[in-house]
Amino acid sequence: MTRQITILVSVVSAILIIALMTRILPPDAAAIMLDVNRASWPITVQNILWIAFFIGLGELSIRWRAGRLEENQFERNYLPLDEETVLRPGDDLTPVYQKVRSSKYRNVCFLPRLIERCVLNFNLGQSVDQTNALLNSSLDLFLHELDLRYSMIRYITWLIPSLGFIGTVIGIMLALNYAGDRANVESPEMLYQVTERLGVAFSTTLVALIMAAILVFLQNLIQGKEENTLNRSGQYCLDNLINRLYSP
Image 1 (cartoon, rainbow, N blue to C red):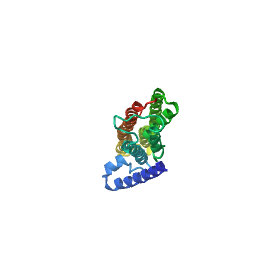
Image 2: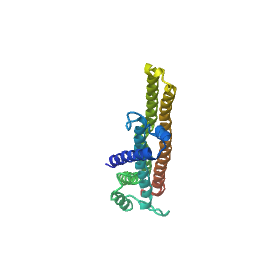
Image 3: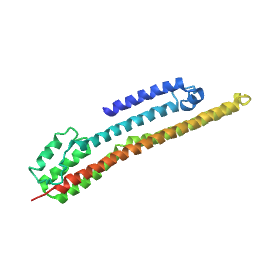
Image 4: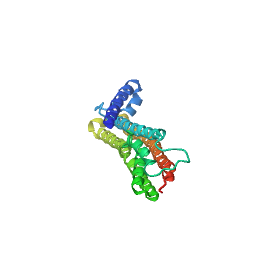
């Protein structure tokens, strides 16, 4: 539901931005950014690019909010932080397990999921080595899960340059069709019309590459932040849980 609402807001925002640029941009800039001179306006490749771009921004905003939520988990004090605490199976770990189980983020965020798995495993098996192996395997699975969450972003960053190239091919085709029309051969404006169409065609690729570069830059920043938070979660469990476990 959150993703559907975000996509809807992104599409509406893109339409509003397109309408705003149509009014405030100079004619030459509007032709480059929006292809306002196209006979099929407002259905143009540039407008489709803007919609895809804002959907990509919406997806990144979801991941950014998820990263902030993961960072906030460290402030919930799931585990004791003092260096003298020793955690034994049963009485010491049961309050930790109950605190994690009662959290509304236990099925959403990495840190409570890691703690719940490790505590449950140690209570049942009372093996520190086995619990440490479970932590490592869980971190690998979560890293793969995190990578899968960016599949839509990667598709959009591939789609936008592809749409740009498609727009360029369409523009070149229309320019050649205009130049090949016998009715336009003797026209004194033929060279001007052909070069104008070619210029708009290549501007489609330019706009698409700029959009893709912005999305890839933001994706790397946000994904790196989430991966760093996952590493912190593993370090947090290692320092405050695994290293404190004691089996009589």
